[in-house]
Structures are given as C-alpha cells and as structure tokens.
Length: 132
Image 1 (cartoon, rainbow, N blue to C red):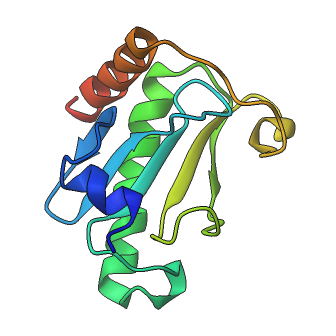
Image 2 (image 1 turned 120 degrees about the horizontal axis):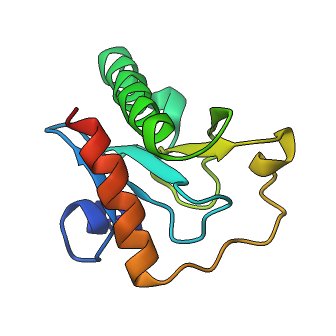
C-alpha cells in the first residue's frame, strides 16, 4: 500500500507544494512547528532514509538545501533546522524548520493552526523564492 506521501506525490491527496522536480517533492507540513515547516521527500518510496541509494540520497539533500535557501529568503528566522525521524510516516523525509531558538525544533510543542489561505500564502512565498 502506498504511503500518504506517495499519495500526495500522485495528487490523490492535496498538499501545499513548495517545490518539485523529477525525483523530489517539497510541501508544507500541515502540522507545523513553525510557519514554513516543510517536508522534503524522494518520489521513490523508501521507508528508511539510510536505505536510499547513494546518488538519490545525495540528490535529496541537495534538493533540501535549495528549498532551505528559499525558505530563509522569505521566512524570518535565524536558520533552517533539519530533522530526520522517520517513524511517523514510513516514507523517507526531511523536516526543514525555520528556527529562532533551539526550542523551535521540539516536536513535543503544540503545532500551529493555520488557515488554508495562510498555508497557500506561505507555500507561494517559498515557491517564488525557489525561482529567483
């Protein structure tokens, strides 16, 4: 059975897309820790990030680096933090989280509640910065 992320890639489930190429997809986390919290995934479904083939693994992180650079242009923050956990969805993914303090990446914190319009505006800003 396809993961929820594969279903997002296949457009069976909507997402707030930030960036996409032939191998990777980036979209806003719908349970964000901070505004702009983005998930970056390979389109090829692999459960565990360290099981990804080397070339695809390198490509994933290079793609995430491009997304993080765009995020930093349009989201007020000190840095973009990165987390790879991989337990909640069995499809390798990277969390990119705008940080002002070290505590902003604490997954025990309450998640932000944003409207569809707010999500769409944030995704559009990051996506626009990707094209610059």
